[in-house]
Image (cartoon, rainbow, N blue to C red):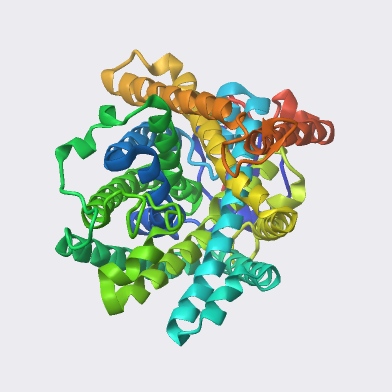
Length: 521
């Protein structure tokens, strides 16, 4: 017999026995496929969700345009708050290995309302990223087909609204289907795609180093590139930092599959740290190689060229890799496709957890009996992504671009809340030993503080109509309206759910004192 503090949804005795183990700190097993992912698989999921090759091709140019040759320094600066927050995730996961991650942890630290908004921040950020990834995958698919066939007409199909949107919807449907079928399918699919993109990226770096100095504007390496204090202005530094933080977003996906991971209390935290180290190393060496080959000028292949900086690898593929340049298109497509698929994991599992604890409609708490996945939550995420992208594209391409700029606000919002939740949750333990004080208190607070500062500065900058696409409503930047509007939409939905599920919002379901799941044989 299974005894729960507050019943969440019916389960069979067989399901309960299969879920089997008592959980610490009052979290509830969801019926997911346990012990399906190891350390390597978990780290690969984290890397895949970040989509390093896609992030590099879309961010190298804008970052170089903001901070010039100090781009490697800014990548290091963006890594610091992410690393500090990763320690918070690791410590919270040890105490509460729950697939709701940020939502569950902030509810137990700060209460249901702050926790609900934290969960909403993660969900809406993921929907924005999913739609953007699908758009990028569609564009690169046609660029790749155009390169293979030698037809500019084929390559241009990606710029036509109707074929582009239909292709995006097809890609979202495929990614949804793969995620729906289970974590094991996801794992092997990711091994192939992540391995491909990282191998091609390594080839690009080697060739860029080998050809350094071949083109006009190439830069000679200097250790000052690693000095953030050499950035010309604070405004440029914060703009570059915001882009850098976006490049690391998604590593926490390996935490959201903690209930499906062997050693769920420790393995996901270790995988997150491994992912972060691989990412910062890849970003630094690629940035240095690109600067040494192309420089940061605003002409030709220079990284600061406004005509090519939104897709640097498209401009550098042939000059750097010659006949193998097509592989760079393949790598970007693989990166976007891999991330599109794994990014469904955190949103579906967060919705599953929110539903299990009564914070969202109970129908999303259903786990597929065969695939052991949050089937309805996965399909709902796919539908939401398709609808969001279609509506934004039909409204205006500027609106779609501005939603991406607003993404940084969401990322800082829920990461900072999770970091502060760690220190507050463990507040009574912080003075017991040095390790606890550093990893559960000091480092998370520093990380949360840095992200809060970026959040505040971004919020101020977003008010300016010049931020993002340059569009505005009544003199207010559209990026500000989208970012704040999406957070306010979450607050409205929370009020509606409060009426539907008052027990959760009274704190009757999930609190720090909620007893663990008890399994009696």
